[in-house]
Length: 134
Image (cartoon, rainbow, N blue to C red; front, side, top):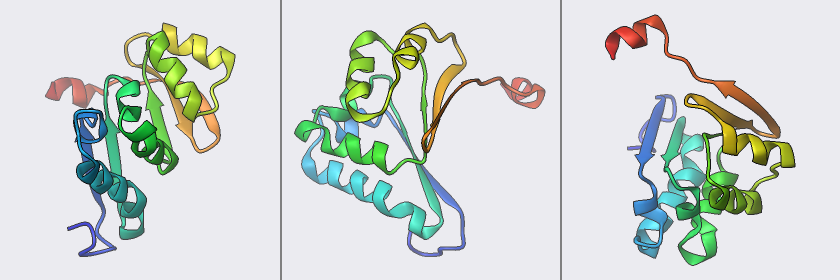
């Protein structure tokens, strides 16, 4: 489906990705997810990986699949993290000491956004229309 039409915009959302590339997964499934993140942009698409526990991304095969997802993602959003997850994330990204402290103290709706080499704190708020839908 991804390769059918390069001009058509498409996105794949992988919620609870730890089930697909974590320790409870297998190499064939994780490899397929790896290929999605490596190739989807060439075909007019994007992919989104969602998990509550960053360390789960790096639990299969010394983290090669999670590392690939991070390296092939132009935009990364990290909401409040526990110390253990911050230490894991530090191995695979360039977190400053200030950012490590901020990640522990973010409030609901706040996140540390990585856009290529830029790291910024943002607050995500719903529009009136989105609130109405909810």
